[in-house]
Length: 484
Ligand code: AMP
Ligand code: MG
Image (cartoon, rainbow, N blue to C red; front, side, top):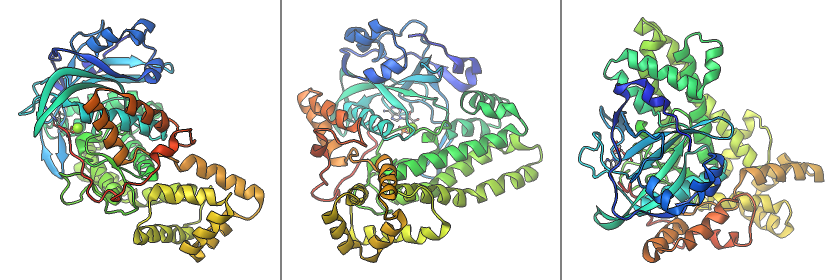
C-alpha cells in the first residue's frame, strides 16, 4: 500500500494526531477484493488475512501510514455543534487508484480520539456490516458513494443498550471533507485555514476551477451544489433515505457518506422515515431536496468571507445561486423520473403526468421499485400490460403514447428503463436478516450471497428472486438506529 498524506500538510488546525487503540483479537470478517484491486493494493496484502486483520483493526499501521482524527463541526438536526470531529475514526492515509484518483483510507470504530466527548470510540458489528453492505449496493447501483474495504471483528464487546460484538470498518472515500469542515473554521473566524481548506478541496475535487480562478469560492459553491443535486436525485432514483443529513455528514466530494440509520423506501411515500431518532421527520425521503438546500445555505454562509470583502455584496452574489436551487433540482429530478419511465427527454408540461403516477403510487401504497420494474416488463408482456392498464387507467395509455408504438421506440424505452430501474435493492428486511445471521452464526455466507446479487442490480442473476420480495408488514414497524 503506497500511502501519501496530503491532508496532514494542511497543518495542526485540521486534525489531531492520534493512534488507533489496539484490540485484543482482530479477525478479518469481510474483505472487498473488488475494491482492493482498484486501489492497487499489493498482492501479498490482498491475500494475507492475518495482516489484513492487523492493519484494518488499527493494531498495526501499514508502512507510510500516519494516523489522524479530523476536526469538523456540524449542524445536527438543525442545531450547531461547534466541535464534533472524528470521535471514533482514524484517517491513516491516502492512496491513488489506477486512474490516479486519491482516496482516503479511514478506520472507523478504531478507538477514542480527542474528539470523542463521551463516546467510546468503538463501533458495533451490526452497523459496520450495514455500512459495508449498503455502500457496496449503492456503488453498484451507480450512486456516488464511499465504500468499505474491510470489516474486522475486534473480539471485544461494545455496550449499545445491550452488549454487542465490536468491529472496525475501513472506509474508502474520495475525501472526508464535509460541509462541517468548512463550518469548523468559519465559526472560529479562522479565515486563513478556511482559505487553505478551499484551495485543498478545489485541487482535490474541482481542479477545473483552477483554469479560470475568478472568485474561486463562488465557483466552488456552485460546483458543490451541482454535485449535491446529482447525488440526492440519484438517492431518490433508487429510493434511498440517508436518514441523518446533518452538515457533518455531507461530503464536499458529492459522495454518500456515513451510512448510519439509512434505509430503502418500499411503498412510495415522501413522508417515509425509518430512523428512530428522527422524530420530526426532518430527513424523510421527500425532504431530502429541501434539506440539501438548507445544508448548501450553511456552506454558502461559511464561504461568504472568501467570496467578497464586503459581506452585503457577497451575500448579494450568493443569493441568486441559492434561489436557483429548487428549479435546478426539479429539472434534474423530473429528468431522472422521465428516464425511469423510458423517456430520454421531457417537456416541462410532462411533469404533471409524471407527478400523477407518484400520486397514484402513494395513494394506492405501491412499492416504488416494483412499480418501475413492472412498467418495464409490461413493454414485453401483454398480460402485465393489461393488468397495469386496469390499475393505472388512462395514465397507462398516456405513458405508452409517450414511449411510442413502433418496435424501435419500445426498444429504446426499454433500454433506458433497464439502466435506471434496479431489479433488486437492499430491502430493509433482507439487510436485517443477513446482519442477524452473521451476528448469530459468525458466518458471512448469507451476507456474501446477498452481496453477489446486490452487485448486479440491473441484471437478474439466478438468485436475484430471493431478494425481490416485499416485507410482510410493508416495513410499518421498521426502525433504524444510529448505531453509535
Ligand atoms: P455520526 O452520527 O456517526 O455522524 O457521528 C456524529 C459525531 O459523534 C461524530 O463526531 C462522531 O465521531 C461522534 N461519534 C459517534 N459515535 C461515537 C462513538 N461511539 N464514540 C465516539 N464518538 C462517536
Ligand atoms: Mg458523521
